[in-house]
Length: 196
Image 1 (cartoon, one colour):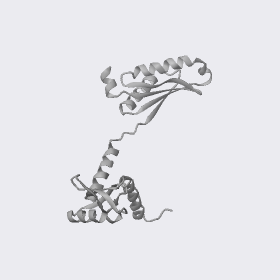
Image 2 (image 1 turned 30 degrees about the vertical axis):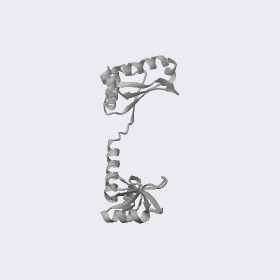
Image 3 (image 1 turned 180 degrees about the vertical axis):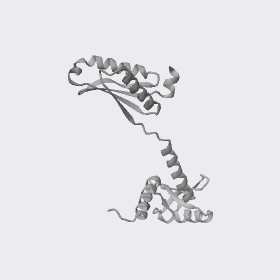
Image 4 (image 1 turned 45 degrees about the horizontal axis):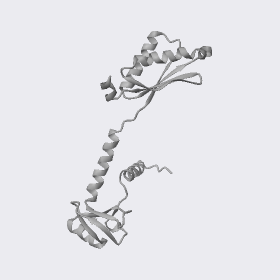
């Protein structure tokens, strides 16, 4: 069910994102066990004690008691500033998401009887895709009886790879699939470039 109020929808989107970012930890009165191993804000173990005692110590320091390991026997609780912890956790997750690199597969289609200029244009496009960090799927399309000369297509795929050998590695050898021959090229890593 979609509600017409856009502010309401934005609120729910943000709420879902926060649930993904932050693990649901029990805090203060939400902790259901009788006793737990308590760790203070400096990382020192205070020992196993009743939850009420841990809550009292946390309240004296102006901090929260957070159940960090509910599966442990006995459960482990830590005295910390929960708001600050949530903020740092979400910041770490955002930084991790920023550093992720999505690798796309770009396709370059060629024909067995391609002219030399057109061939060079396709090589130039593939080089650009590889320099952007994307993989390149080279599809050699056969028409009619051209499929009977698959060896010529294989040679053309290898010629294509030889043009890009300085920036690419062959991830998948040229192989006939239906009426097409497919080859996949991946960009060279820094170590592979240095090794050449």
